[in-house]
Length: 128
Image 1 (cartoon, one colour):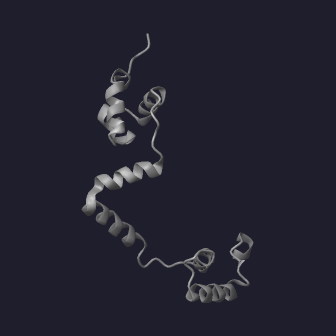
Image 2 (cartoon, rainbow, N blue to C red):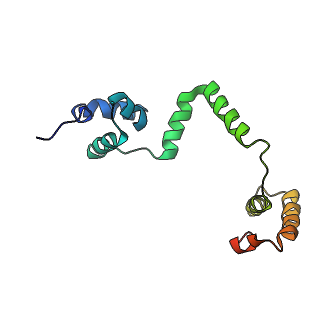
Image 3 (cartoon, rainbow, N blue to C red):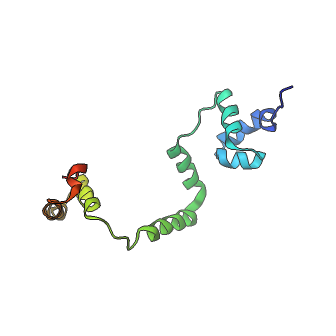
């Protein structure tokens, strides 16, 4: 006899909650299961699942101003003071150079990094 998971018995409620913006992870926690039965039931019901960016948009909307500020400060703290390799700096300068955001400083940076990277193994990784 096949066991009916409590997720499968509340399909309409599950769909309503998911479409109201609750994540699959939160639904799994609420129903006391892993995410796979949630995915399975939603797919079987024909619900269009959110992409990662769609889920992130909803998350940021639900965070509010204070929550978004907290997340931004944490992200900035994680990279502040981090030393960048010449290869990474060159890659950034090259990307900026190919966009409308390139400045004369970006071109000078690229030229300077090119001279430093002449004998560097980074050439084999197409940084030049």
